Image (tube, rainbow, N blue to C red; front, side):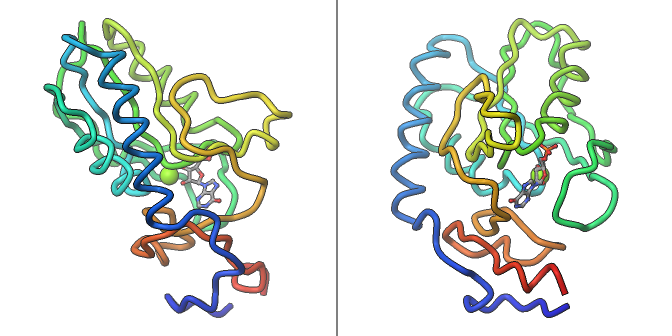
Length: 184
Ligand code: IMP
Ligand code: MG
């Protein structure tokens, strides 16, 4: 296995820094309108959503509250197992709050389903998910319900927070990782 942060591990750029910035501003405006007067609690799923989250919150010119939850799926592979462990819970009591869960990517949907169920059990006033990338092919074409940035093909992507084994998160763009990097 060869892992570097070199750009030549990227087969192609899917979304440039500028394309991401433009789309995130649109999503921020959409959320701002939807949550006018509601002071939403924006929940960041660490670590993948971190860049998306901070850009999205800054694109909302209204009162928002911020909190973070860290989850880890077991293993460092390229596919989600659906088994999720909370390694850092929220600090906020979300009962009666308007919660927006901010996630980097929805693949099988298991991670978001698990978290939505978990946080719903704490009786928020409302709950919705904002997801930058949607691999809906992997769910038989079923659209992510909530706020979606881009629909992408079933390929492994990295950058702008997304990693492979902890690498590539700090790439400013989103790119498809060369298969040889993770299939050796
Ligand atoms: P799901 O539970 O199958 O929806 O997987 C969601 C999680 O798997 C995301 O939070 C990511 O951590 C990870 N994931 C899925 N696809 C990718 C990808 O293409 N690149 C990086 N991480 C991914
Ligand atoms: Mg993740």
